[in-house]
Length: 348
Image (cartoon, rainbow, N blue to C red; front, side):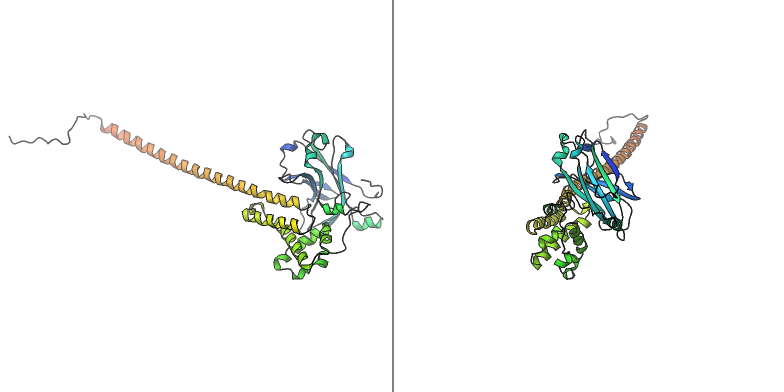
């Protein structure tokens, strides 16, 4: 990263060293919160789950802030350090405006096969090192100082292959003059579709290739494509892990497959989120199986306690009966008696 043309931007650095990486729960691995310029941040490692074949990092706003009504202009770099050759460290630099609806930014760094290979230098002695270089500034002040706005040097946003394919020779990602409202009559969307609009607008801001890919499509096709994308985003936004039953899994998988096959969107940035959600079905089923077995164990334990109580009561009753029998036998001579014999009265 060449910062000579941006002398007024001073980054502050946070280093996250993850030891014993193989023993970490990579489904929810986050750094501790760290503070820079009065703001709290966290680094999140994107979940390494089934069907995810790359190592990705996110920078997140960690402050307790309201859903809307705030924003934060931030210049930052995320770096995956190569411990064998510093020149091979992977660094992603970008300028982002964090706000209520956009609290984190992430990007692809290396393939998992390279990350896990100790010879590549990213995971050495089961340890990896990640750095966040952050500068929080007022955008207008930086522009007044004739500083050029930083654009992502490698990725526009997490996994956006279409953005990479449309890079100019200067390395800046081409944007789009069109907006979602230019393409679609959003007022005509059904009530359900209208719920997708904020998610679609946010997605189009950070992934302008979505709009470019549909600029020449028919009205009906655009309506279908964006509505389908909005539904996928909506499902990912509102669903909880416990919601991923068979019906929810089939619904999301069907939506996703149709979207990938027919929409013409470049969706590599979204695929890890979808695959992670689909992978939750197996987790939910396993959790249901575990809970069922747990309930069965509890039921059997209750039954065993009840039987132990009945056994204890029976043993006490037996002891009383045994003692009563022993008491009755005292001074009693037992003889054989033929119960069918006559009592023995005779006149003669």
